[in-house]
Structures are given as C-alpha cells and as structure tokens.
Amino acid sequence: MSGLLTSGTPASRRPTREELEAMPLAPPAATGLGEVVRRRYLLRMLVRNTIQSRYQGTVLGWLWSYLQPAIRFCLFYFLFQVMIGRGAGMENFAVHLFAGMVIVHFFTETFNGGTQSLIQNRTLITKLPVPREMFPVSRMLVAAWHTVPMILILVFVCVLLGWRPDPVGMAAALLGFLLTALLGLALGLVFSVANVFMRDFGKVAQTLTQFVTFSVPMMYPYTLVQDRFGEPIATYYLYNPMAEAVLLIQRGFWTGTTSDPAYTEGLHLPDHLFTRGLIMTIIGLVCVVLAQRLFSRLESRVPERL
Image (cartoon, rainbow, N blue to C red; front, side, top):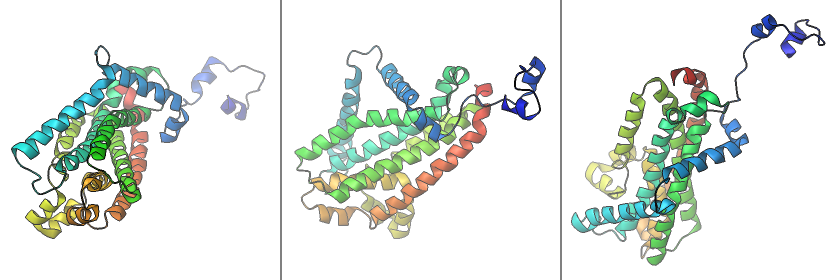
C-alpha cells in the first residue's frame, strides 16, 4: 500500500484491481537463520512432531533411543576388540570406540536428515509461509535429541571405569559437539536445497557419511595413522574436521577413564588439539554463514521444483 501512496494515489481511495496486480510481490515470509530463531515456537513444534513420528506405532517408543546405541556399542566392541583384537594395548578401547560413535552418529544424522528435510516437508513448504532454513535446523536438533541417550550411556560407562573429568576435557568435548553441529548444519543447508534440484545429492550425502566412519580415529587410534603413514600424512589427516571432533570428545571422556590420563593424552592424541579445534570451529561458523547465503539465493525456486 505504501508503494501506491508514494506514487500519488490518494490515501482515502481504495486501489483498483489493476493497481493491485501492478504492485510488486513480497516474499511470503522472512528468511534466514535469525528468522528461524525468532519463530522458535514453530521450530519446537517441528522437532517434536519429527521425534514423535519416528516412534509412532512402537511399543517401546523413545526407549529405542537407548536400546539401539547400546546394542550397536556391544556389537562394535565384540567385533573390534574381542574378535579382531583391535585396540590391543589401549586402555579402555571400548570407550575410545563408543566416544567416536557418538559424534559420528550426531554428524551423519544431521547431514543426512538435513539433506532430505526439504523434500520430506514439501507439503509444509508449499502451504505455509515459514523460513525454509527451519527444516535443516530442525533435523540438526532432532539428531541432537537422539544423541543424548548415547551420551548418557557413554557417561555411565565412564563413571563405572573411574572417570576423572577435568574442565579442559569437558571444554574439548563441548567444542567437538559444536564443531560437528556447525559442519553438519552447513552441509545440510547446501545439500538440502541442491537435493531439490537434483535428487542425486541425497545419494551423494549417504555415500559421504559412509566414509566418515572409517576416516576418523574411532575403530583405530590416531597413532596408527602416524605409525603407518608418517608425520606428513598424519598432518593432512587432521585437516578432516570430523577427525578433530572425534579426538576432542575422546579427550573429554576416554582419557579420563585411563589410569594415567596425561600419559594417554600425550601418547594417543596429537599436539595443539584444543587450538586446532577452535580454529576449525570458527571455520565451521563461516561455512554456516556462506551456506545460508547460498540457500537464500536458491530457496525461492524450491516450491516450484518440489
């Protein structure tokens, strides 16, 4: 209406149909991650509905969030420590393995869920004026919700083994989760909108997450990379942000369960772990900003492609 007033139309006269049709179209809703935060009540509703739909029709319900990671941990432990003997000479290798599983699970669910989020919510996107960044963000929060039971199981096992937490270790673990959340969200934003235009990106995301399990020091210690390939390759290996995130959470939980945490940290963890984690987290934040800008450039074409 303000456009009509500035063009000389009297305020007391109602605009004609021709004048209304000539007015520029306004976006149905503001976009951006800031708008997602402002409409957090919608975000909570979306997260709650996604979680409820996952366990709809099951008898145990949310208890599956505890049973599945516990069973997965037992299988990995039996296979890689009892059968193969991987981790021989490493104290509490099961905690080393499960700590990595926690962070990898958080990343893969955030990445894969974010990639499929726009397609799976096509009805809401075409009918409701909501910021579309809300859907990848909601999948990250759903992934965090399903990671909480794994963290509780990890803490329980660590306490049984005489876990001795320290402030630096807890800060390292939190930094690892923050780095993973930023990386998963950035990739989720980019791949979600790309998957609308070309469904192959969903398969690409699934393929990439399969490599994550074997590209981080979870089923093997970081020192194995150093021993097998030497220092130059080990340095390049640490450029992988997910490897950094796994090492950070291992610093927070696994080293505290060993008889000499300082010796374990010096032997099995690289130097300057915390500093490198801070740098990668800042880079991850920049990646989220760039991913959101790319998302904003393409999201206006999403409804017509759905």
